[in-house]
Image (cartoon, rainbow, N blue to C red; front, side):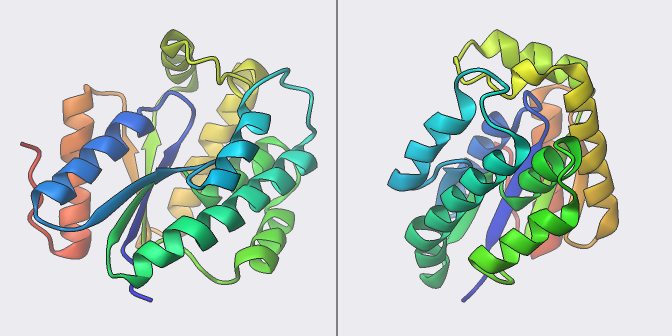
Length: 213
């Protein structure tokens, strides 16, 4: 399987949705086949699970239940969407992937990385994206952005600043753990500035000539 999967991850409200769409369009503009997807979700079954995870009271699931639901959604996402696309040689751009489980449930949810990685291994094996860009921004700014969206999918946002501070720090630690596979992107600037950083990082990683135009 040719692994052309790129993930954009980070705290809620960091701009992942906008930046995944822009990167997806840049790859399409270069004449390459590319799928845009997201987690939780990305397949019919995983979208059903997403509804359970992102809506409702923040305390309705504990961290372990969240993780089990996330892993079930990820398995469906991979089996039904990501793996078939990669097998065709196409690019995959995903808004979130397994590092979100490490940051949200493993660190902020206090399950520990060993527990998260064990379930990850049991459910999907050794598969990892080729490149992960982590958008880094102050969690209070990010949460304000997320709340302003008003999508209603705000269960995780309701967990508060302290929880999301732990999430941000977890993502920063993850990025530092493997500087070849991860790239930490300062997301505090304008959307265009962040897009330029992402395109530059992807071009450097894959020897592409993507444009921000």
